[in-house]
Amino acid sequence: MKKPDLSKLKNLDYKKLARDFVYGKPAEERRLGDLYQDKTGLYKHREWRGIKDTMAYFNKIWLYNYGMMVADIMKYGGPIVFAKGVWRYRWLGQTYLPVMHWFDRGLEGTRGGVMLASAWHYRGMVNTTIKQFMTMLVADQNLGGDKKKHDHTVAHDETVWGGIFYPYRDHLDNVPLQMVPYFVTCHVNNHVVLNYIDAVQSIGLPGDPCPMCQAEAGLFVADDMPDYYKAVLTSNEACDGSVASSVIQDWMINKPLHAMPQPMQFDDPLVQKHCQKEIEEAWQFVEDQYGIKFNWDTLVKNLEEQNKLQEFEWEKWDVAANTNHYPINGVAQALYRIYQSQYGNSPIWHEVDGHVRKIMEKCVEQKIDTFPLTRHRVIAWSCAPLYYSNWCTWAYNCWGLNTVINMDSLMFDMTIRTDSYEHTLEDMSTYHEWAPMRRMAVGGMHHIFELWDYMEKFNCDMVMMYDQLACKGMQGVHGLFEDEFRARNIHAIWMPHALPDKRVVPRAEIRKIVNDYMFTVMQEEPIDPSLLEFDDSDSW
Image (tube, rainbow, N blue to C red):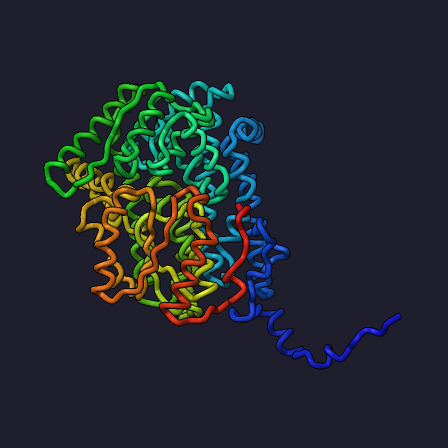
């Protein structure tokens, strides 16, 4: 029997091994890319973050969130209803099962306060997602659901702000049609929506409209949408390019429907008055369909609670803009913010903000450098690739590109007055007009070029410019941005993508574009070379 070679053991630095075990390896030695299995992107083994952070991740994130996912199912309808939904709807099981892999991707490489604060944001989104789809399933007539619940639930396009229904919150549930089956699904499991894009194209819709609108219409074509509502409020989504798919959805829904379009040029005072009238018409539609009355006190209560969420968001932005103690990574910040601000007031957002406040205050008081690898402070502008929302986690670990803020996070940069009906309606119409992908994407040059102000405010030296290939609005100003970047001497990386459709621009191609820019233009070397190239083509 051959004797083992013990010579290598003599050359080991046992003090360093012990230090790496206790605290985790320093960033330049982690080689996070070596953890991935080819194709799937799943881990060969768990990331070792040091004793404290590994135990915190296992207990406070993995175990806690698995437990809370089960608790939420029990709280909002029970396992039998959930099981029926998984059996009936393709998107449900394929989104629910990979949730913790979604956490892993978004939180990769994080430590300490960043790991915990970012995870709380994920927790808020998971809770709200489960609450929404369980509300759907409990009332779903396709599953023999509760007819009374069905008749007290209103559906609406995901870009119709949930606050429109605040006056009726005591008697009415509102659940966005596409927020869970489409928006959340893209981020958690990017394979699922491809089926719906193909479904709507199979009946003759051309492939050039926005793939977001295609996927949403495809849900109805594939008969994969619960029947949980008595009536529905729709909008023109983010742009008028959604009209064709909206017509298809209207045919498929075949229920009382009120269209509440969002104006394209909303700075005109006459347009403002028109939008206020449309909100009042929407309220009248709800009252006519559901037999309930407008409640001013309920509206004010929810608006004031929402204002508290916005006030804390400003505190977070102030820390992010002016210190290096901000404990929330780019993907958690962006997804939580757009979900919270668009869905509207909910107890879970206040709970999450309470936890995050404590973590942030600790980081500030102890002057913790939360993102020590930062080489460049990045602002991400325009519409993001939904199938690769965790690119900013990769970019930070690989290149030190710290995505401080995202355009969609800044859409609702306002609070709403509650001192009078007139002021409230005026501010609500502005909020409605500043819907996702609206104000700074197709809201006119003044708003599109707010980039420069926010770039200065957040002390960013680089722009990640999303290039949504099927967005006719932003494609039309591509050259204008190029001119401005050159004139202002701003480093900007153009990231082409097709919103939910990863087949057009795969994630590997996005990484290659970033890699090429950092090598050739910035003349920099990666922090973690193992993340430069890897195959995650089949990954969730």
